[in-house]
Length: 158
Image (cartoon, rainbow, N blue to C red; front, side):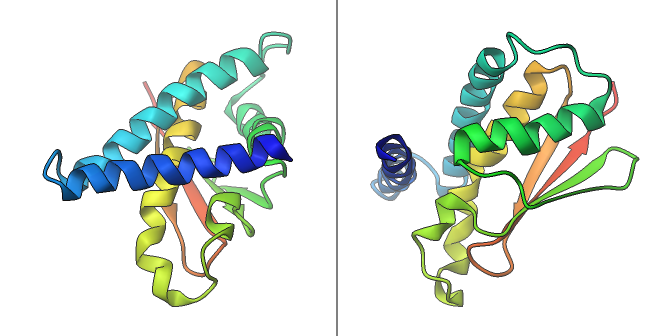
């Protein structure tokens, strides 16, 4: 429980710190999301390396996505992804109905515009994890009602 609170506080402070620095003229607002995603990418690479050191090789990309939704998500966010969908052509949609990093914000629509900056780190986390498993991808996030969100993963064929 304490580690979860620390993670939430650290994440909120990373977001606030980057945006505070951007407001003071040390960077551009658009670059903040890129920085957060790059931080998440590096963390995702490290976590996947640690989590998969004792697991068998994955059969295919669907198997890898199931691992991300079950084991990886459970370790990081203390719950599994609520829904995984695919079109079997390289696009996966991961839906989390009670996303931990958005739970602290109001369920109303007034904070909906601030949601993307709280999802950038997680997009990078997913992308970094997949990258370390040999899958190049583009990850985007979408929020229509708080605290539910959808992460769309587009696999890029090499």
